[in-house]
Amino acid sequence: MINNTFISSFEDDLYLFTEASSTCHLLLVNNVFAGPSRRFLERNGQGTITGSHNWFPTGTAVPDTLTDSTFGDDPGFVDLKAHDFHLRPDSPLINAGLAAPEYLGESGQPVAVIPEYEPTRESAWPGLAAPTKRARCGPLDIGAFEHVFTE
Image 1: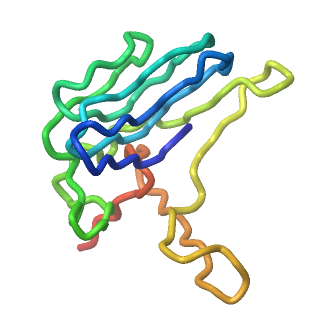
Image 2 (image 1 turned 90 degrees about the horizontal axis):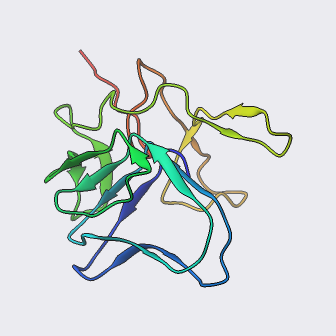
């Protein structure tokens, strides 16, 4: 999972859960996990969890295989309560992501992943709003939205 925004609504929400039969390998890069919950992971299966440059609320316990993580009290969203997860100009997520995220493809070769679009509130079904292109301006921001400074 690369450049996503995960929001908890309640203090006891769980961001990620694996079943006992799970053998998947999970890569987390440039994601933000925000909201009142500090419960990141309930791991019951096998497989690895690795990654870097993720943002978590202060006090969240994360595996030590998630390197270069940032912790804080405010990710700097425009309006969390109104579900506007775009970034304010003072957000600690700006330019804090891994610049060129990649994963190992089926052939064992690295595959670069630079997000091309931002999420929209509308469905991608025909006749509704087209996806929004994600801006490219400097290092990647953490999360699903790229902040664009305007003069």
